[in-house]
Length: 165
Image (cartoon, rainbow, N blue to C red; front, side, top):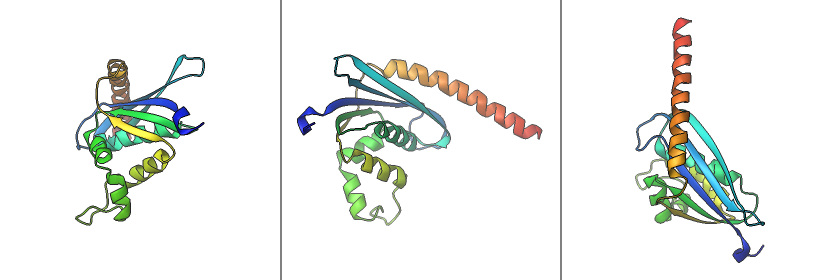
């Protein structure tokens, strides 16, 4: 395939948390592409984390989705994670890499390994990032809420068993 013949893939990322506070959370990604016969195809997956931030969870979801791509594609990523959008808009990955993955204050970049892996996975693709309404959002948020409730019940059950032992 030439650069103009690349598959077009949409990746949609939603999480149950927003902001930098670390807490239990669930996230989901949807991938959509058009098959050769013209039919849309979707794939999705959840990630559950006992203690995470919005940024880390969104990066894990991005990584998991990108890992599914088997050939160079044009990828449009839709996320509400402001940090990811800011990093990609300001082209900070290249700056961080050049600086040895440290900030201007000399501190290691948070979630450095996730950023590095995502950067490597994006190399063969033409990737753009956006935040806006999409057709999967309401369904994803509903699914995430169901998954989050189940996850919290399981965490509570684990804590209860731990306290009894």
